[in-house]
Structures are given as C-alpha cells and as structure tokens.
Length: 282
Length: 272
Image (tube, rainbow over the protein chains, first blue to last red):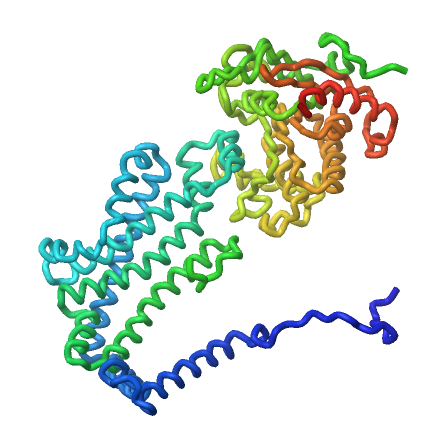
C-alpha cells in the first residue's frame, strides 16, 4: 500500500470552493474599498448626484485629510484638541474599568451585590445616559472633568455586567475542585473565578473602549471646550463637510488604538484562550 | 457453580482483615429544602488497599454519599470517620477525581498537579512539590508533558494528569466520581486498567461512583448496590475475580454472571 496516486483511478468528485470564498483577506478588503470609493466618486465629483455640502467628493476629503494631518504633525491647534480628547478618553477608560470591575466583583461574588446593587444598576443602565450630560457640566464645569465623567458613566455598565458574568463562568466541577482542596473564598476568587472570567471581562472592556469614545465626543459636542468633538461641531456648523469627514477619520484612529491596546493586553493575559483573537469584536 | 447470589451484608471478604480506613455508620441525609430523604441508614467500611464501587440508578443518593465522604456536604445524622478523625469538611487526606479533568488552562500540567499544595500550603511549598509531580507524571506515563498546557492534552491524558493531582498530597482515600465517563470507550477501558495499576502500586484505598456495571466489576473488590426513595444500600457484592484483572475477564462467564445479577437488582426500577 503506497500513498502514490494511482493513475488508473479517475477522480470523480472534487470539492469545489466558490471563487468569492477563495479571495485572500487583503484583496477582499482592498477590493471593497475600491468599489465603495468608486461609487462615492461617481455620485459626487463625476455625476453630481449628491451636493458637495451633504457629501464631499473623495478628492476633497483627501485634501482635508492631508490638511488636518499636516496640522497634527506640525503640532498645531488640532494636535492640542486631539491630545485633550485622548486624555479624556484615557481617564474615562481607567475610571470606568476601576469602578466597573469593582462593582462587577461586588455583584458577581456577593449575594448582597446580586440582590441589592444589581437591580439599581439595571435601572440606571436603561436610562439614556447622554441625558445626564447637562448635570455633569453643572457639577463639574466645562473643563474635561465633565466629559470624563460622562464617558466613564457610559462605559462603566458593560464592564460591570461582563465582570459579574465572568465570575459565573467557572464550571460546577471547578468550584467543587477548589472546595475539596479547602480553598478560601478569596483563593477561589483570585485563582479560579477571575482568571476563568478574563475573556468575559475583556469583552466588556472592548465594549467600554467604544463607549468612552462616544461619551467623550458627546460631552465635547454638548459642553464645548478644547477637544476634537468641539472641532467637529465647529466645522459642521460652518458646513465644512470635508473637514468633518477628515476629523472623524482621525478620531476613529484614536478609538482603534484604544481597542487594539485592550485586544493586545487580552492576548497577553488570556494566552490559553485560542478562540479569542484580538480584533474579533466581543 | 452458583455465585453472585444475594449475600448478607456481613459476608466475609478478603480485605476484611486489613486496617479500616474509612468508617461510616448509620448515616442519613435529609435535605431540609424539600424534606427529601437522600440517604438512610448507610453503613460502610473501607479497608486499607480496598477498591469499593457504588452503582445505582440516578437519584439513588450515590452522589450525595460521595459529597458527604469528601467533606463537601454535612450529614444529617451518623458517623463519618476517616483515619480515626471525623470528617467535618474538606481534608488534605481525601483525594478527589471528577467526571471532567478540570485542569486550569493557564497553568502547565505540573503546576496543575501541585495546585492542592499551592492552595493549602502556599506557592513555595507548591514549588517544592514539583519534583514529586514529575514522578507522578512518570507513573501515569505523562513524563514528557509536565510543561505543556492542558489545552494540548487529550481527554485521557488530562484525566491521567488529574489522577496525579489527586495523588500529590498522599491521600488516605481516593474518591472517584465517574472519573472516565466522559471518555470514549476504548480510552476508558485503558484508563481503568491504568487506574488498577496505579492503585496497586500506591496501595490506595479507593471508592468509585459509576454508572457502568462492567467498570465497577472489573475494578472492585466489593460493589455496593444502591436504590432510591430513600437512598440506601440494598446489597453488597464481593467480586472474587483474581487480581490483577484484565480486560479479557469481561468475556468470562463469571464476569457476565455478576453483571447480570446487578442488572437484575437494578433493572426493575431503572426501566420503569
């Protein structure tokens, strides 16, 4: 018995893979971008189906991207605005992670947290949190503190829920194992439940990373100040749509950076969970 | 050649001469929540080096019995004494094995094996126990896998590692809760033979809860048959097949007779 294929045997059935499933990722992404930009170009610059005030052409947007990029690189006022927003986002994320994790442990680990704290958290979470923005401004002023507060407020809840869910993730057998080894409650928490729950906790952190971005920009829209959100609102009020597009694109880089920082940390810490690759949303 | 006839509970068996390790007398367990009597009047003595199994249909109280024996659940009444000391909670001299290997995926195989030491005596003691973990891994044929993470072990290998974790603290008794029921049949047969070899080498006293009659017969010196409502031991069967047992014994008439006898005892209600 050799592994050599027998030339006398006809292969009658070969698995077929559709052409569209054979495209490599880079080519697929590039292809889609080309198609979208082509339609965009067609609809704006070439055919004029859409007014430039509503949607600028790709060329105009590119011009503004370059302009904003130059301003950022030369340390202009836009870099200062971006730095303000970055600080807001950073502190909001740190505060949300700290408070969210602590509340999550309280809810997931204690009966008191589950019975008394969780119902209130659910009640607050169902409120439209952006509506609290005027309150934060009244309490904390127009400086970045009020924006940090709003962004942290929005981002805290997913971390609470995911941390609490993570603490439930350890199986009945694993809990029994720890019990049979005479493990204390703290030992079980730190050596079993928290490590087991890490993938869940990181899911919450990724949702929170998106949440702090939304919260920070909303805060800057409503409260003014120095941030990128204020620049966007200013450009929009001047009908400078290409500038708005350019600013949003740079802003999204900040969000991506935060998201991938969390994903990178997850890959480092949760090295055993092969299913959870960075970049996978959730 | 009539054998495996119902015998009185006081029947003499080969291990009776050995030192008693685990003694349970007039044990009962009633769950207050639904006033369900899970166990009533259970009497049981495990002698040094003895392998005893308990079989019975679901709800016959065998899991409750195991939980009480492992110190995870308090009895309602009765004496539960291991090595002369009453069992009032989890103890280092009780080794446990579960249906799932439950190895922590962020620790290497060797680190998983010394986990009971780490929990009880701290990280330094756990580190000091690593050479012994390696010896145990060699005993179960996993010598080359000490520094591998459990994600790379097969189901049978993971259960062998969990045998090592159970043995690391030199327990006086091994409590086995359907340890191989999640494995495929071929692996399971192999693991049962491994378990027999390891128990013989370590002169372990073992107590096995299982659904598989064949598994119980091939491994045990004695089998306790339990029935539900209320959970109780209805018969004790001494398995007089010679040791060491081999898988070929499954095909002997004697083996078949014993299995048939237990199935008769249980069958009437199991299929109702």
